Image (cartoon, rainbow, N blue to C red; front, side):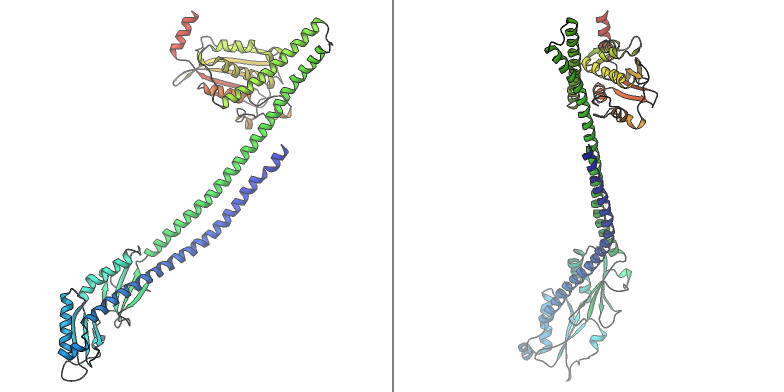
Amino acid sequence: MPSVRQRAWIPWAIVALLFFLCGFLAFFQNRWLDEVSRADRQRFHQDLQDELELIRHEFDGEIHGAIASVTPSVDQILGIGAEKAAALRFQKLNDSGGNYFRSVAVVQTGGDGPQFDPDAERRNPALIDLPIPGSPDRMLIELNLDYLRRVTFPALLVRYLDSKTKVPYQAEVLSGTERNNVIFQTNPVKGLTRGTPDGSVGLLDAGKWRLIVRYEQGSLDAVVARAAWRNAGMSAGLLALILVTGALLASSSRRAQQLAELQFNFVTGVSHELRTPITVIRTAAYNLRGKLATQPAQVERYGQIIQEEGEKLSALVEQVLAFASARSGRVIQTREPLAVDRLIDQVVSSSNGLRDSGALLEKQIDPGLPLILADPAAMRTAVNNLLDNALKYGLRNTNWIGVSASAVALADGQAVEIRVMDHGPGIPADEQGQIFEPFFRCRSAVEDQVHGTGLGLSLVRSIVEAHGGSVAVESATGKGTTIALRLPAAAAKYQNEFANTSG
């Protein structure tokens, strides 16, 4: 066992290392989450800017296409004149469903016709001033703001922002010359948004207009916070999993260590239990074979010794086999109505340990006990184990052993309680919860080198619980020990059948 104990510190060292690593990871987790939050915020802004660039590209493309469709060619200018050609092309655009422009006019830079006004575009943000290729005149195009507000801008925002951004926002299109001149606004009720925009892009080439988008107050923070909490939850879950794994490893290792110690004690105990009878049998057989015992009385005595030691070996083997059967769930073979008083009498009369120890047995069996429905062989094993334990550990200060049986009323019927008592040294309180565990032996028994396997009480509990009963211990250091078995009474029909048979 020294090697087992020497290795016992390894899992605890691993657990300590895991706790240290978890603390180390938790520290860096906070820094990582902060960096992730900043990265998420930057990503949202970058994604927004990318979408706004796509809106600019598509909007400017549509306006340029419409402008190209109303711009007269050189041949048309030479044939019918710039003004008439522009009017015809504008009418054709309207007939095809192009509603981007409210009006198209040709102005002159000289002559008697409508004159070009350089300040007109500045005063009216809906005007676009363009030169006419192949003509000294210029063309003034007035954008259809109502159509752009109702159709064009909402469609672009839905296509590029609503379906991808997933964060509430407010968008505005402002004139590049007059910042307070609102061309379009997603929510006019809220009015102009203030502060630094989350994204903006110039429209109409040189930035005649500017599209500005701001996330609603707190909305981006809420999205980033949700992402941060999600990441924190995943990280915390992983850390918790590591800690739980470490705890389970330590617990499993501890149980394995305890099991190894118990198995070592079991092997040691069984070895002692086997060694003594085997040595006695070999010695007796040697004497008989070497004709050292020539008198009939001596031969009979050696024969009796061999028989008694063989019975001890047989009892030990039976106990180990019974424990193996209990572990595999085959504790009970057959059940039949059983009288507890007869059961106790059979165990007492067949107990070699009681006869050899010279102990004073006091029986107190209440009359008229109800029957129990039990396996007779298994119940004899259970009661005999309790009696052997009392004889082995309870006769250090006295030679008194007590056995009692009484009826107990339960909420759902009756039960019979069998109690085996001694006035021995008792069981320490910290060991009472372990005495029914396989291979467990009290410290005092190990220190005093009292022979035993550590299977007796474990087998008792398995047998009693297989019958639907319970087992309990009452003990105090220096005041003795009482083991109580409580078994449910058999059904009334068995009680009547047994009474009729006995009668």
